[in-house]
Length: 280
Length: 321
Image (cartoon, rainbow over all chains, first blue to last red; front, top):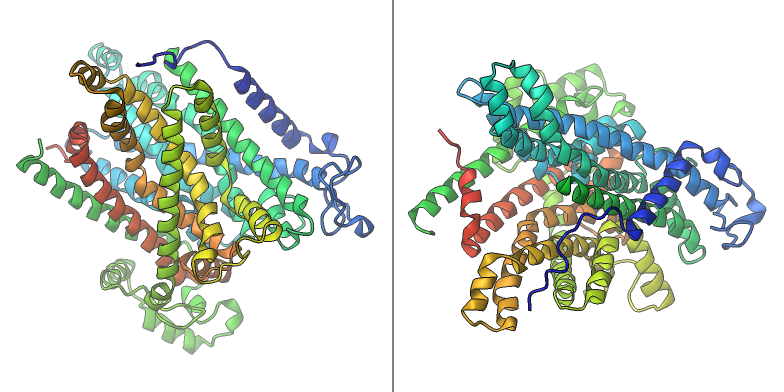
């Protein structure tokens, strides 16, 4: 009994997708204006209230120094989302450049360029994401800037592969052929036809990529390679809560739940955008 | 179509893998050139070592740092080829020895996690391949959550639940079976989520493929179709990801081994990163990249035997004249 009732349909966003969008909206609001939303400053220490479990005054509890976990999580959205977004943009730029180089170099003359670009993409792809980031951080030393660039470079080969495929496909397509026959200059063909066509699926994928970058950056923060301790970054918060896991689970739980929320929301929205794109 | 042509294409694919490995090593060499500060000083224990000018000069000569960059590059590649990864700055023993001591526990952990991930993914896909829409949506929501779950957070939750509250497994990885359960689960669950998502897409595509209709027309039973055709083809996209999954498990092992205080490559790597022990970090990363390339090659060749339709994809790997 074959069922065809699950065939993809274009009917706008579903309820779940609207929820994901709303959740992401709240997180972005936190990132843009944490001071407006957080009940207390994220670094306000209050030793008398250390390890308070979640309550009405401290919905997410307090940490080992009596700092409000909710406020820290809200301020952490800024660090984590900005790192994720900037790293994704950089990774996209590098990926598009590399992919266009590999996909667009045609003919005998440019064969070496294509060969090298292809090998660089495959080689970068061979490094497991987190490990490549760790290698780069060892080279440059820890810190937020290192994390951003390291995450960008580890995500670039995935984008590059897609752009490469897209460029190759676009170069062989009817409109490009027509523009060429018309005598349009190569630069114009690339700017108006090839790149837009090749980049569209990648830009959608980048929505998912932001979530991935946030998790990757949090993992590096968790290993203590990001901003120094008191800074409210989700990964670093998880790490500092670890010794008190049994005593105060909330210090670890809420920052991680935020990372999970970003991951789920970006995946759901990215997929919805991809579905709409296919039917557009 | 697995005749002589297949062997040629396979040989081309092996050649491609070798080219990728050479590029991997080259990129690593390039990355090394970006290390700030004096590499001779780093080899002598970093800026704090107060090394004398004579000692620096000696180190430069010893590591060949005074020679032209191309000579250094070929020297680097030649030493890699012989498995010589240099000497750990911190431990003062060859990196190959450091890796040799750490590889066993990590391979055990990653393969356990890989098997576990496939088992979990299969259960989810089989449940969702049934006709109940509710089961499908529950399974896909679970996959989505699992795939988005940061493994270091999951590890903490597992420790909290199974070690602290229930007391079934130790919170710190001791040797033996009970010590590997929680770390393997923490690694396997997110990977299982990814595999299940990809396999489900493959199963859905296979479900409506023409060869299913023809199998049905031949009078095969629905169960036979589901097992022999839908599942077999549906799993190919997942199998394609085996190398990726292994890579992400190796990366995940870095964090998980730290959390569970397990010995292994991951913990060696993180210690190396924190201490800026460049040769050790480079060794672990190069080893993982090689493992990725080899596993990707093997899965590609195996899949091209399993699913004849991938023949054309393999053919694309052959450089066209």
